[in-house]
Image 1: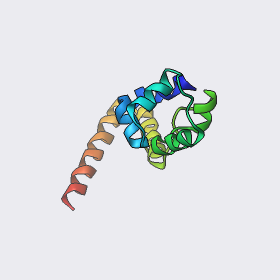
Image 2: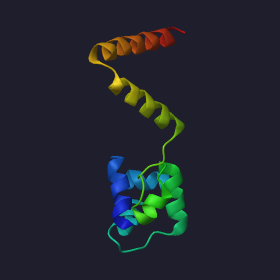
Image 3: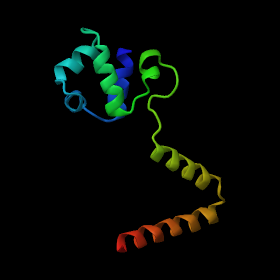
Length: 108
């Protein structure tokens, strides 16, 4: 589990200090956990999962995905998969339409 905590922090591109601040603990606490000097408390693990949207099952076992998907992630992934399935000329058209929608949204 210790290596998975470090993997999460690194995947979020956070220093130990930044990672710990959001959890309300010091860099030293995160360092001690990552180096195996102190086992993480259950309460800290749950808080970590909530703050960073970490899949608790993955954190404890290494099974499944690192992060839980949010509704926004689901929408984005669906849009991305649809976009990838289009022929290149339709991708260009779709991209222009998205740009137009973004401009329209910024005007209102």
